Length: 587
Image 1 (cartoon, rainbow, N blue to C red):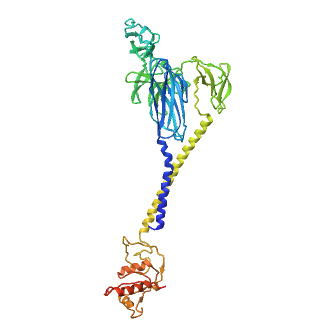
Image 2: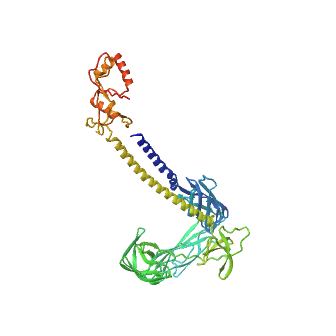
Image 3: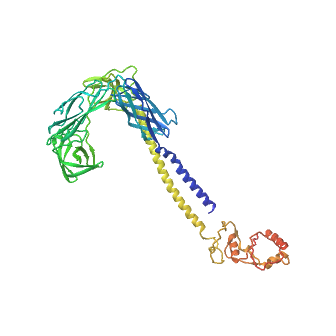
């Protein structure tokens, strides 16, 4: 391979290395992940407890926004590092203090209200590195807080009274008896349970009293003593008569006794369900009307939303549990119908305190609420705002900003994200630009790879041509009238590019005898034979011709030739009878 071919190959390899290595560093950060860990402290009722939370990553962190949930009946949120919240929800925001920060540390303080074990869990999280790339969460922990009670707290977990409606308990209630039975008619959907704890500090919870189905049902009354550790369960085995109807609740599966099922079946999350061909129309949730729907060629009864674009079908599993499911015909997918009803709560709008700062990105605006003109704040970027902030106090005396939905007239606690709307737009634009740069580099890498592949093929083709026979190569017959026999060079033979054309008139041939006469200087060089050639002869062609005739000694100048003659005359006593050829190149 000649020098130009070597340079071309080296340049090609360098271009490939640069093209591949440049975007590679930008791809590594996509594989990073993060972890969230908590401490598990213990505390006595009435005291404050500190929960430590850490967000760690192998790469440098940029920001972290974590939403937490806790039981407000056991813990009361007091304060925290870059945290705010209450009523069972906390928002924690972490920002980097240094360029290579890999850990965010937070402390959260709570006041223990009552005894018991409770958890502080992560409900949502968004964690970014210094390049604003989202980090995946490889481990998400939770805090378990054990709240113990003072020795003075009661361990009494008994009931003082227990009554049900409809029906009668068997046997009659006694605090020491924990198991009862009762019977209700076929039209009873829910059992009303009135349970009063013997100790005022104990807590009573009910389970299973809603959505009774035909046959056996179990209602559990759980009593937790004031110390938070002592628990007693009272159970009622309720038998519901056959032939009645039960309206399915929105939060779980219940059976409609009048529902009829055909051959249509569907599998949802690995569970087989039968589709009801008909059911009691009164069981449909509010806002839906019955209609006949063709499910994959089978007519079934369905509920169609009057205002909502939803289609409900009634399904039942092999265990007899039934309920309404939403069917999306376009995607052929199912989801359980769950209708959420919030508990009504009232807040009182109050003037802004002197030390309270309005969230960034909002400006003051007057709004009408229930006919009253009040002061609120709306986002600067919204021309027609759909939400409005108010400063208000709840019935627990806590003051917060509340987010009011102007169209639906609902309220929700407002949590400042720590990022203004303009900053958020800037971050979003930066993220979009980074994404574009990533794909641009990817496309460049693909293009360079294709070009590199093409250049590699070209190099291989040139190398093959360089090693083959062609004009000006020995044995090719491209020049001169020498022998037409094709000869392949030996492995250790090196070819050189033709640099100098030798005039054919200057090429002379000598035999061994002529060589000896020249060395003895007996006669002038008059016996040489000059061979005339019709075509130009290159140096390597002359050399090859001599090699073919097997009598070539060496190509040299006339001065070197004369010097060699003298050296041979002095050193050689015997003459070699073999003939040889020599090329004499005259000026």
